[in-house]
Image (cartoon, rainbow, N blue to C red):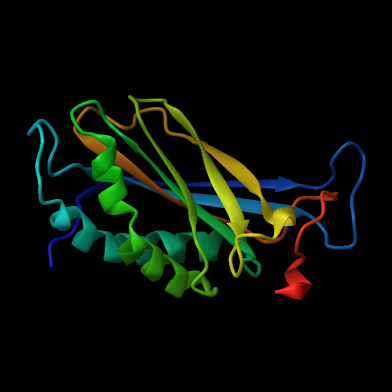
Length: 187
């Protein structure tokens, strides 16, 4: 199976210790995003009907980014998400091909979790484009306390013929979450 050529990987980690002076018994909220800057095999080719080359290659990428997230979080993963930015010689459909269930299943295998929906977003952009990666509870998308984001920006990516593929995780829900809905204990 072909692989996507990786130029670089980037891992972003943030830790919230309190919100508006409030903390709780669960401790700090740690969020991690692992990104791979890859060559887009379809860049500059116009409309290409069959994108399975990207989809098939995304399996190993999901595993690698999941491993990087797991190493960086230093804790149990409770929520996850995925995102991508495609350079201007590509199209958002190339990101959809990279972030399908092939990617998601291998990512999930690395970090654990039920077969719950993995939230995602995609956009077209150039170097330094920011993207907010959506996060949701790994075992049930309707646990509102875990709806969150982590922002990823890579100063030199994506170049026109590249894609930035991102997997993200968090160790808990938001500090001070109080908008109702299902709880993780109910799932």
